[in-house]
Amino acid sequence: MMHFKFLDNIMQKSIGLFQTPLFQSAIKKGTINMFNSNQELRDFASILCEELKHNDEFELANELRMWNEDAFTSSTEFLGELMLILEKVILSPKILSMKPQTEECLSTIKKALG
Image (tube, rainbow, N blue to C red):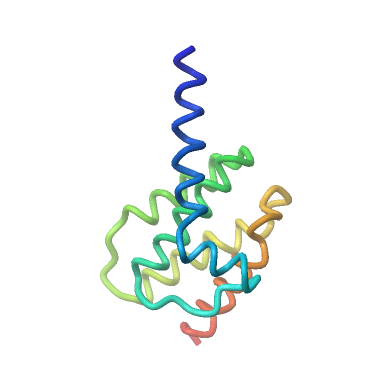
């Protein structure tokens, strides 16, 4: 019974993340146009992390979670580390529901890093 309660808690957290304005905007537009802050980028990473866990991509989810909890010395390091993770995420056949948003995020980061 405890196992199911744990799963219920994860699903409730996921539902909460999917109801955030950032995610809803991404769904409505079909793309992530820009992030107004590092926190919005971290929020997107949290949503993507939950999606990865939901689709049994635990290794990628853990890598993304660790990135999201880390502190960085520069914006280049911050974006560069995320870019490396997102490149792996894009290759996953299990991330179909957020693939367009993830590709747009990756493209935006690559443009920013030049």
